[in-house]
Image (cartoon, rainbow, N blue to C red; front, side):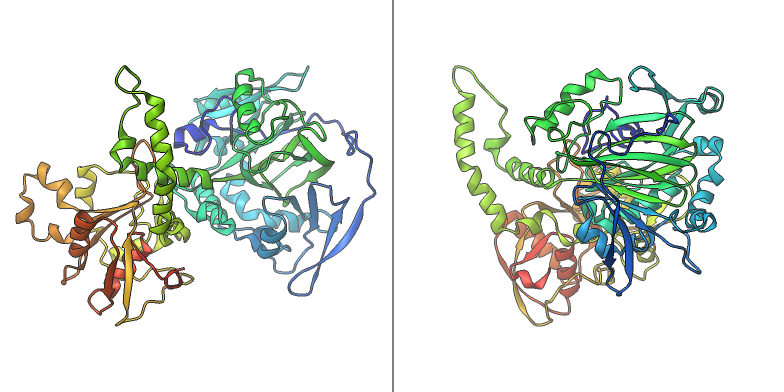
Length: 597
């Protein structure tokens, strides 16, 4: 989560993400008033009808209450929350559809096992997670963290602000936690973090479910981490809000959350007055003022930076608490324990669109010119001429695929990851392994989100990891592609996509003549949407083989001669696999939009 001293919030390397922390460990041992200056509302209940006709009892103060509380009663033969839960499992008895339709990114949801349920049932709900977290042994949690460093918090008793201590030595962190009784934060072990983040990005659709478990990608649309909070007695984290979507799971102990809805919708930065970090104020204010010029840095003020009622809930073992980005919260520890928070974030439409425009503008030498202002060139005059032409460039993008060009099918369908061991690199795409075994293809093999665009990296791919579109059958079941054999279709090239032969990047350093490498000439590299970031990491990168009829070779030649010219293709047995493959991966667009939704 966002540490107040952090800089960029949307495109983060793994190391910078480890410094973006959020303190969710609270507690001063004192009971707080629920009304917090607001009129106390009489608790009411109402029945919420599920799709299966069964009723969920939920506590409702008023429509202005920020949290919906739903009771998870004891269910015979109920299974624990798994390491890769879907929303039905995590938020039972609420269904995934109910959550997405009514609450996601709108209102907090508290699923509690502790109203009429039993302690055994509550603990069973989180038994698998507790086991994966080393049965909540603080020393093991700190030793096996995904974090480079461990954070401990010192609370100023005068104003409850937090100072964060970043400790690289695990033994020192353990001593400060156990002996000095400092509340501690670190990321969960890789196996726990990667499973939970991948599953919940996919379930919520954040970033289209895209995820890079290695954390090296600068441009993956979905990102996240699992924060582990080891609370201590009398710890309070005061009011703040985050820019992430959060699912907190209480594994032990009890925390009292006090919540109020904020005024900032889809925040791009958090607001962290609970930290003693005055250097963070200006950057957070600038972000908030993009949406609300009346916003003031500080704790929430009703009808200024917050709206609606203030509500308090006690989150106990087995409970799940979802709260959206931009929602004010403070938390105190009633009983010390361990909780994990799945913190999810995604690229926004402004980012993905501006990255695509960046690539289009780079294709025009007028936009590539350095900014000059001298006796011969007036910078403002040149920019005026460019801006005048900008609407026509956007129109050309819309005419050549538009949204489909920016988000081709492969980016709208999340990969199916599975873990294969421990550590940062212990993940693979399910279909990727099968492709290498010669059975079918996989998305993991084609998304080079790490951005290894060097000749050495491409040379290493060659035979073993080259996909064959004739054998590739890992297209998502819900992807509609309605092109029939024998049909003639009109296609255009994605203006954000480019083909090159593998030999173009390997022959120079291998001292091979491109013309002498017959096999290499049949292998192509496709890159889609790559010029909108400093490292030119590709949103999609795939290495694949041409067919015997040189179908891809002809497209490659057309790209160099005709650019984005429309082309008629008669679908035959020889080219149908490659055509479908190239549409799915974003190189071609069929002009009939009903054919590839």
